[in-house]
Length: 281
Image 1 (tube, one colour):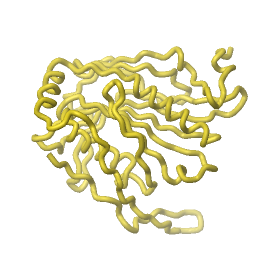
Image 2 (cartoon, rainbow, N blue to C red):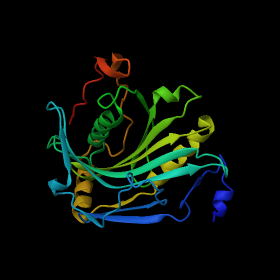
Image 3 (tube, rainbow, N blue to C red):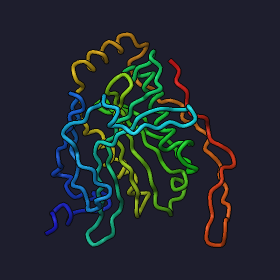
């Protein structure tokens, strides 16, 4: 039986199953509490990751560590994830698809003189994260970064838009909405909505951006007493206590297509993109 919200869905008011009856998820991150309300997961078992009750931020075995040519060293742990469909008018195909992921990053290479609780330092950590996930380090697909701001819950919000689809109104558009929040001196939370529009991109993209921002803005984080005290101490010493949009005008890598045989080809790097961002205390 359809929900009345499904019957009333339109391009201006899209329908997401469970949007008005969200599952309230909560996880204990070493006495730091993370809460968020998310719509019901839609079918795909591969993209579903259940929310644990507890996660130890300081147990390195919980993280997968990455290192490449001494350029970066950090650990990544996915906490939970969901996938849901965004629908327009009844009996029409979905207008968009979205995932929601909560991920913890540990920075092994952050200098001891720096802290994620310092806005000037955390901006650099965010820039490095974006460089790796949607910047020149990750792909030959160029991305533009927009709407850098701090939400009411203290999460630093930024969007990454696929340039290949951003400038072509006839194509489906893909973008990611990110939210970043420091959990300790060298640990931070990244929440991500990865979205694909499926129709009427000019009218639906702003709506999907709004939905993603609403989900990320609903995240509630309560630091444990030790980290809260540390954060207050760092902010008292910091030269500034607000965030500023960093310069993200990166040069993306250039590739060419090399045909191996009539049925197979590969991408070959011609010119590398911008070098990996460096930390500056």
